[in-house]
Image 1 (spheres, rainbow, N blue to C red):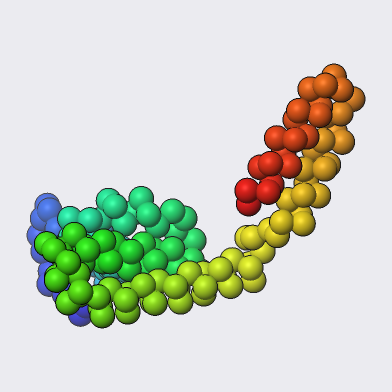
Image 2 (tube, rainbow, N blue to C red):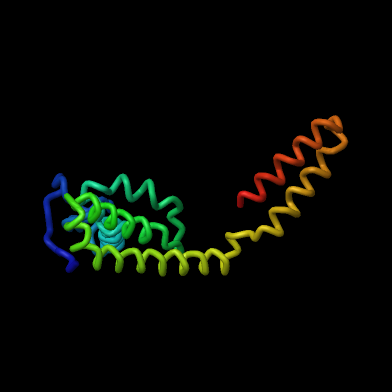
Length: 170
């Protein structure tokens, strides 16, 4: 965005907020280009591009719900977008014939979701965001060892069975 160096009168509502400056402030900022208005304008432009401008479509809220975490290296938003597109394709099918006709693009989207999920998983592994089943079992053992002195034997056996069942379901 090119700066506008237009001078304005002292009381003008769009005047740069730097004391004594009589230059028009930049759009999206409180200051002119000479006083850092370009940084504010750039930040506003970046913010407006955030999340692929999902506000344009009716499913922005659904995508946000499906996206979960919005960490910088996460692909969850992209996965959520593809899943939402798949859902929209399926919802647009009125009968089996429509489904068959749209099966190519739907299949392609499913393949893309699979690829993104695998990539997301690899990123999570590299960042240490995932734990394997062995670590879960070890953690459960540590917890049981901590609470053992404080729980009656019959309750402890019941608790141990529930923990084992929960781990088996992982």
